[in-house]
Length: 315
Image 1: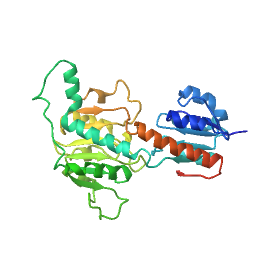
Image 2: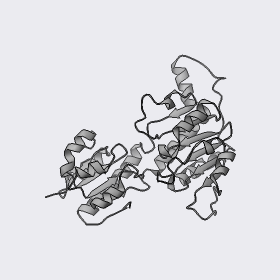
Image 3: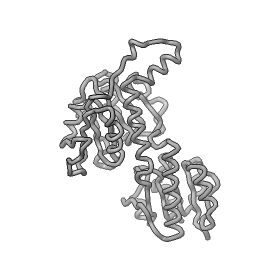
């Protein structure tokens, strides 16, 4: 019997067609399905390719006795219960680096949007107004930018904004060397939050980073500083974020990720006039989806056809 593969959260259409045409695999004909549809398919699934919408929980695993392999088409695997997968003998992989450029560019887009108030300007113009004096912004040039988490994405951000000639600081306890020409390593988060004009988060969501950014750090930010989060929502305490923005203690923020996704319609974050919100678009470029899809298809073939596991993520 051929391994039965389900792609639940979408894939580049050409790559999905390539996957469907492989003789060695049986592939569900739709590259995007609802969670209820997925639950109906779980009893026969051998391989599952997901993005951020599907959460592979212990309950899902109980419904999937034949599941052997889960691929996160992206980098973060916090939506997969990796401990439960290990207990069930289910292998987990991601596609590291495939959407790094896309995520980095989105973080920079949020920076520029908040700095130059372009989102608010567009809304104002759409409402028939001409509020030129009200919408004066700030430049990125010569600002002090703090990057928290200096892995692939954080480093791309630093390199991409170099042309604006900011001073770039970064905090990352994993990186031991400070021999990086385009950024300066600092030893504490306090240095980033107290000194920087722009702070951009690029951390994975693990136990040590969950609820890492609270009022203790937010309260140290300069009054004209901005905060960007295109990493994971649960890194920032959203109640504290709401408080500091609603009281106008910092200039603004741009968030692409949230503790609960989709963001609830009733979320108080939606009411803040100094917060730009986007619906987890960090990896949502055509180019990134091609790269992610290529890696996922290759990993499926390597595992189910060649008995070779690539990019395994452990619990």
